[in-house]
Length: 276
Image 1 (cartoon, rainbow, N blue to C red):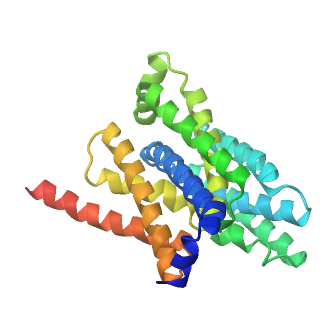
Image 2 (tube, one colour):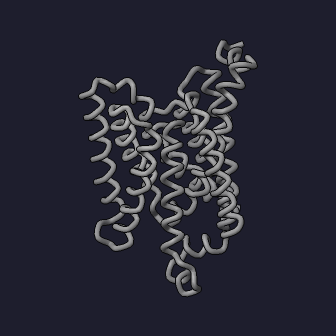
Image 3 (cartoon, rainbow, N blue to C red):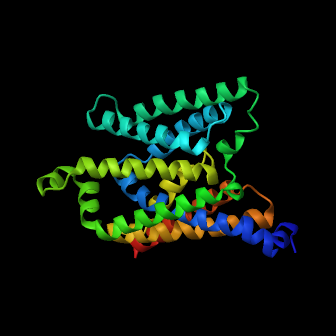
């Protein structure tokens, strides 16, 4: 048996390292996939990529200053999400342009600060992810976030649906679209920061975008896309984790590859279904 798999099934190692990583990972993938459906349909899918780069900059600066990285990054990324959303709503700066401006600047600051402090290697896991290093606090926050997101989709489904597809109609029916957009911005920001611990800033946006796009290949209803997206995301995560242990590869990259394979398979299924 592969040495990594042997280690995985050691009771002490599984309980202390693998189990928290699995729980935290599943929670983050559920959050990312559900939020991703709305972000993709609103044509704002790249916000995850932009916020992850901003998060990397904040985490790097916090590490250099010996501050708690998570406590620094969360408010910075949340505020950035508000600003990006406001700029997009007011048409002062196109969404993609705003994301590019903020993300590249923040990423450059993070790289510059960490390199000057000689801590490039110390903060590299924020760039590429290290799911087995998720702390107990990270796991608890991830689980709490997933519960909040799932409950939101269960009890506020109709309002989320209307805000996603037609904000003007939603406003006409008495829904405060601005508040819902802000809530999504906060949830997305927190999910991105937590996801960076697992996937790294370079790959976290894949958890938001790919499962949603994959589900849209075969599902025609919003409800179907939401459910299938979550299932694909969790399945890809579990397969990717097992692959990384079996083949001694990076977990984040393995998870993305599995997601990409699912996208190809579902695209083929979607085309065959349309032809028939």
